[in-house]
Image 1: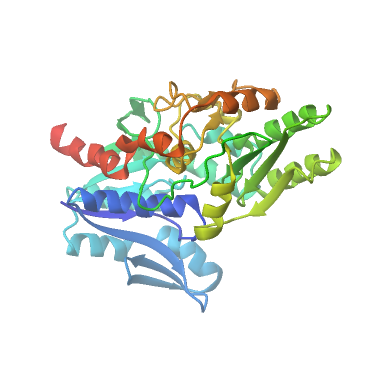
Image 2: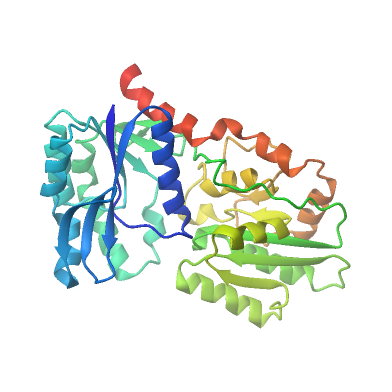
Length: 374
């Protein structure tokens, strides 16, 4: 089988989504799929380009016209797909259903090429309630055309338990892990005199980091023998991050809540070696999401650190190194985390080994076998 993995953005070294896409491509290759990756690139001179691997498929030029053109022009990409005799078009949805994309997908389907659309988060409309006008407009257009888009699809890949989305049968998988790319935590703490919490994310309101900070406000109202620190790593929504910093300053917690910005490679590895306990999503309820299999839960487990989350993730619900938080707006009970961590009797290696079945090779295998077995 010959596949094209299509995305509508570029890559950043520290970005978890960028890493995930590359891991998925590698997972397909490990299943003997010949796969090409098509993405957008802005070169050092400001030219917008559609790429397939290292090959330029189309140069859209510079400026505003180029920004528009790369979102609506797909003829050269279609020609490439037909010339290369692609059998499967795998698309990561960018909330960008529009008449131009619908037309492109329809022409691909008319050439007997299966289209599988991955929706990273579903449902997602509530994520736009407090978004910028530009993002809300994009979501509005997506709502108008998603039904037409769905008629061109073979299947939809989801990390939820939905059996159908937009009337299309789903392929249910978990977010996976490339174990070769995720370093195991090297430091196992034997005594607790301080506890270092870590949250690594492209920070949005649904991560609920404010719940942790409010929990630390309550915790430090008293004289505590165990010092608790919260290390927040990553960029994200500027207003959300500014609000977190404001809460921290207003409550004199700057000594205990640290903001690092985006980190990757050795810098990120060192932060994880230092960390004791992971903070995953604590407010998916703000987006009306109950069931989801997030990438972050798997990354924490692969690193070998215990963690807390509030959604339902069937891969982790009964894991002894997971602490569940209620899916509400209550402050996180820091004493509960300390007690849980102090009772945990698992090494980093044992935590990591518990999710070996969640490799990207195994998850992508589910996808490529579906067209054969359906």
